Length: 195
Image 1 (cartoon, helix red, strand yellow):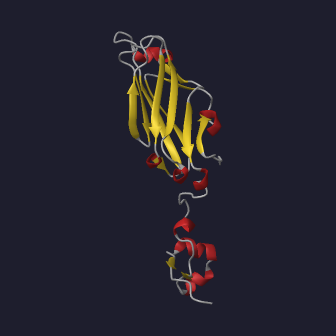
Image 2: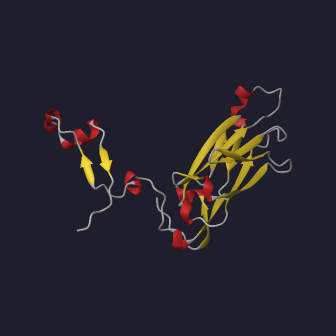
Image 3: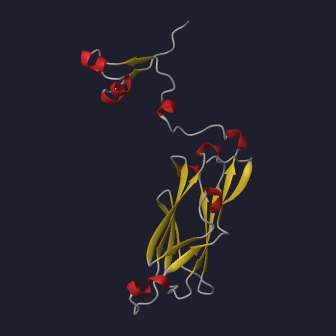
């Protein structure tokens, strides 16, 4: 999936990245991960993640928590509002949180109803719902979007001047593809010689 970014801030919903408009997490403890493709080299300044949740009205709001982590780093832990069971979480996103071309966003729940109710029999009552109003604002520089992070061996080794294979007779009988899989290939990098 490729997105073209214009200079400055662009707002994306989670459905822009092929996630459902709403995601529901059931159970007292649950976790969902979102992988948002982004070119870390095109990010300028801070981008922002805004998550909006609705929570089950029967939750013990003082003892129920939602934690959001970015790149495996916990950023915020909040409880549902005592007034209306809504939760809004805003987190700044920086290029240093991009890994392998993605922001990884984890939403983890630790929900309680009350001490007297057995959680096993109350699974349907434990839920939070990520609302369609959740979004990601990405601050990008259009001039930098052509630069991409290395993802293939050819990005690290742009040109091999020599490919050395063993001279063993047994190797000659095997197909070329089998040779490449069977033996360690030694790539010798040398400066290009003048023509």
